[in-house]
Image 1 (tube, rainbow over the protein chains, first blue to last red):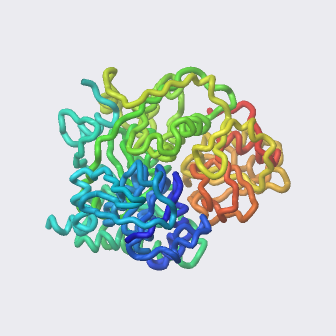
Image 2 (image 1 turned 90 degrees about the vertical axis):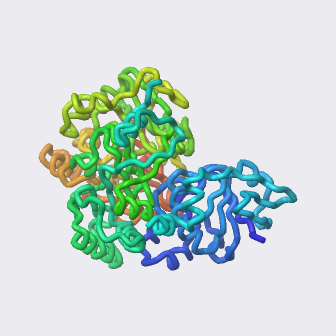
Amino acid sequence: MSRIFKFNSDVDTDQIIASQYLLLPNIDEMKEHAFESLSTDFAKDVKEGDIIVADENFGCGSSREQAPAVLKALGVKAIVAKSFARIFYRNAINIGLPVIVSKEVYDYVNDGDTADVDMNEGVIKTAGRDFNCTKLPEYMQNILNAGGLIAFLNEDK
Amino acid sequence: MGHTLIEKIIMRNTGMESVTPGNIVDVNVDRVMIHDIFIPFVKDKFEEMGFKKLWDEDKVVLIYDHLVPTSAVEDVRHFKIGDEFVKKYGVKHFHKADGICHQLMPQMGYAKPGNIVFGTDSHTTTYGCVGCFSSGVGYTEMAAILGTGQMWVRVPETIKIVINGQLPANVMSKDIILRIIGDLRSDGATYKVLEFSGSTVDAMSVSSRMTMSNMAIEAGAKAALFAPDEKTCEYSKVEMKDVEWLKADADATYCHVMEYDAKDFVPSVACPSQVDNIKAVNEVEGTKLDQVFIGSCTNGRLEDIKVTADILRGKKVAPYVKLIVTPASRSIYKEAVDAGYIKDLVSAGAIVTQPGCGLCCGRACGILTDGERVLATNNRNFLGRMGTSKVEIFLGSPATAAASAITGEITVPGEVKLQ
């Protein structure tokens, strides 16, 4: 079971990981500072396999790939949002972090609820319901299935 | 069936006879831009992918700007890694202290009309000012382009934005794009392209257009395009006959059309802490300020500095306000010196800094702390962007910023003369 961490709309990449931490030498050092400006204990509380559920436009703002990278490094298994900002969405798939569009899940769950996420079927079981999520275009699904762009390109060779 | 600007660029690039929004196509990248913050990550991923050489050394531009000059010891590591990368892989175009990447790319002719360019920064949309399809990517994707010269893109839908007529005397292109972002909201153009046209746009300088394409990402846009005209050709040093193909067809298909009458625009600001939280300046007039910032890849060009100098000439910045002015490139800085604008600014009490991104990305040259308020001409007012998360950031035009620096509070500017 995954614990749900719930976020509002327009979560920007500066909130996920602020610019001043981008100079730290690696993602593991950066990840402790995730969502710091929102004064949450997210970075401490999140466990391997947990998920983020968000309203519209998750990941808007900068092109920093460190934003999805710190969330993945903290153990986030998937992000379910009503919509995603474009660069964040591509970056997440390129590093093998599933980003799932669902217009419904957000409205049915509370922070701290649990969910079962079936990535293959694109189904999220939570709040006593099964939610079917929008599937990725095949090209992007193949990158995600390979575990990200590096693995995908290496498969090609 | 006709095509939009973005479709024309993708068709020309791929040799495809027709493309439709939703198609996924591989494009041939004309140029890439990498900046100092992300070069260590790009290098790691490039080598992890097993590439031994760049696909084309001449098409790679590395620009140091976010950390210039260094403000912390760890910044130096990025320069060392960048310097080594240039040497090892033979990068042809390298700028260590010439200005902000999004100014240099069109200014130096790296991004030209009809090109497809990707950069490791979200404001890469800027080069749409000369009719270039340019967009931001992450470091993994950049590493893949460096090795292959290719990038897959989904052909985007286009929102057509038509602006006709004469702007009010105190309105700049910054006020236009702020209003449009307010109307679209911060995700209103996600996955889409903005295509600007109309007599107001035709009358604008390339610099004014640059401010608008720069900020298109704040509505989520993938790119923001202006069809090239005589001014573009002069700026980009290309012949009109070579770019005549680059115009939208009259029967092109748009997902949405927005029409504006220029006389309806007013000086505007984005209020804390989202770029789509737009108000007219007169609604927040009198709000006390601690600092004013004029510069960045959004508004650090010669016309912006001229407007600032015209307003400040013979006047003084309010005693409790720090006014920081940052030209977008070294050549702009020199032109501003030659024109006497820098003397006007310094005489009025401004701090004029070297070109760079330091303050806009919250790293150096004027960062703020809890309870302080700044009016700035850059492109983002996110929480914590220019200091701590308890700093209030308002975004406005250089004219609004300069007028406010004198009074020490948010102020409606008087008449603006760009030329």
